[in-house]
Image (spheres, rainbow, N blue to C red):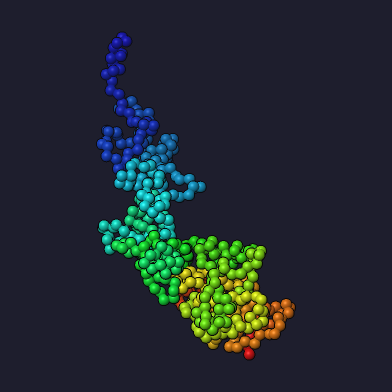
Length: 505
């Protein structure tokens, strides 16, 4: 009987069974795998069909079209959401983390011969410039060895960003404002734009020790075109071993193009003010920190002499007389002239004659103290790169002086540079400003300290100074004037009423 029962059970066909919820899988529509015969899922229980398929239950005969009964049945089974297949949600990024645009990217294409470097590691870059990873940002380079673009060979540019370790390339800004992505082996650092001193010349030994501005490098002859600081813009072809770098100074064009400025005028003037009680050499260090050239002054003795009045020799700031304690032992006067350019060239003859009269009067009054003058056209070497850089340093030059002397002319008050100088001297530097007419009539004795004046005049007048933005200046320097005016309390578009000391006859 047991055998008969067992055989009957084996012969009975089993009801088909749908896979349970734990066995269901997500069908990827983009998958290339063929269908494995899985039946289409429909609302049935996970325990399979009723074994008695031929017998209709009372629940089935009642009809399942009723919405209420449908809702009850679905509710018992967990609702429609229990039978809806959904694509697994991706893991969300943590909100507290910063978004990394390169997080989902795969490894970059490796360099030829570079090996399989891990992602994020810096690739080795050929060191052809003497630096660890090629020329640094801001370096001046010349393009060479370009086979696919030979027309670019010999052109000079500025490195805009450091070398990309993954590609071995860096961005180079050319003179026409175009940007090229070039390999390090196609770049060579040059001395173009630097101030150099000639040395070791055998064919022209008289030029040894002369200052010059280094120009373009000619690749075929390997010589630089240098412009001598002789006032005649003499050009010579010199090899690199015969050039000694004196310095490379910050230019206004580069300063204005920087997203992050190396310094601001309000901060640097405050720093210079804090150094006023220090030694003279300590005060001059601020120029090296800012990448600017120190000024040069004209001695009063050079102006008094008729032979040297028109083209006087200048004295470097570090060569001025000092006391045993290192403090300045002379008088420094800044001269404000009518001009559209901060550092004009050359200085007008009429202005030099008026300065000669002033120097003679100061010598007669106080022969023991030497007087030096900061003249816009003579405050630096006769080199274009140093003149443009000196315009960037002009406010620091004014801070070294004790007073500002304005040579009045019919249009002096309408110039933007004249307005800026008077406003900075009175409102920022707390220096006396003297307005000198065509003739001088100095007092026979020094005025009392209560007068608030110094040496030249004690007649104070309230003078209205217009806004620098309304003054006359060359378009190329208006951007620089606007940034310098940020040091003023009223800014670029505001004038002021200031106290000046008038000397007119």
